Image 1 (tube, one colour):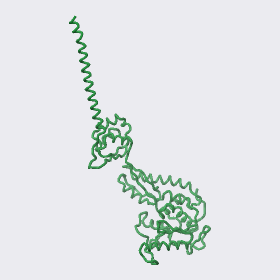
Image 2 (cartoon, one colour):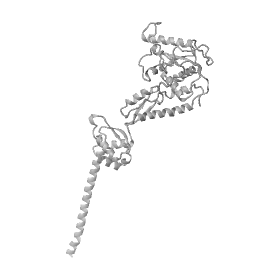
Image 3 (cartoon, one colour):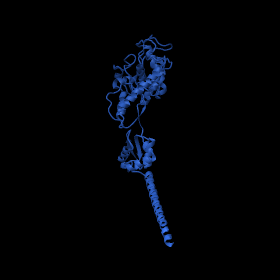
Image 4 (tube, one colour):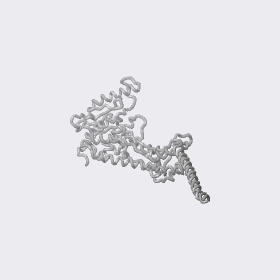
Length: 392
């Protein structure tokens, strides 16, 4: 009896021992798992490596199409993460490995692994921009792009004057300069086509090319946006009646081909024959003198009704406009007096520089055909422009 009783209890004790061992092993594994999770959690949120050289950030570029292995290698090589294996594990466990985005990133010094993953998943890329200002020449546009260290490659030839659209363009590190020029050129073609389609019957230009030429002169004549329509109207009126445009910026372009002159215009330069000097040539010059923007083109293609023929600087950054030559001479006299005061000269003394206002003293002829109410000043040579409808 007793022997059988003791023999029956042995398996129970063995099973109890195995259960205890399993519980102990389970507890040990749980503790190990908790420790591992805590360790991984601390690595995930802990500060990462400091940026090299004491910098506040590290720039790292992740190429398009790169997988998680290549991305981890790039980040490790840049000193942004400590372990590629830990990065890949964290990306896989969080599901970030399927959402990492290419681009250029600016990673703060000591950014945690979590912070790095958030940057890459949300695509917080560094964004770069380059601006071509309105009225800058194509040569200046090339200068702007050549100074951008993010861009690569050369620009084989300077683009045709007036063929680029002034705007701000987003660029990426490694973009070619030629590709940015192509974007500027395509934008110009698209915008010019839309503006040309919306032109007014009052415009004097007969082609999109003429529109760009005249708009470039308007753009260079005034930095005051509100004056562009009025300046466009003056030049349109002059072209209608055959008066020369007499625009100082066209003199400068003939001398520098789009570079700044850096000084006032000399009288010898005003009288110098170039293809662009509108004091010496009739009508429009052969090419634009800059890259005009939207407002200048719109002003040329939709000029306001006006009978003004003259304008001159007024000392405030803008211009004084006039219908008649006598009004214009009075405005010029006021401007000359402003020049004298600025130069510290006594009233009535000669002006300090060769006249640099546009239009200056016009070349108009007595008896020239003019719009009703417009007075054509004496002593001018008239270019008669056929009054035909604008080209369709």
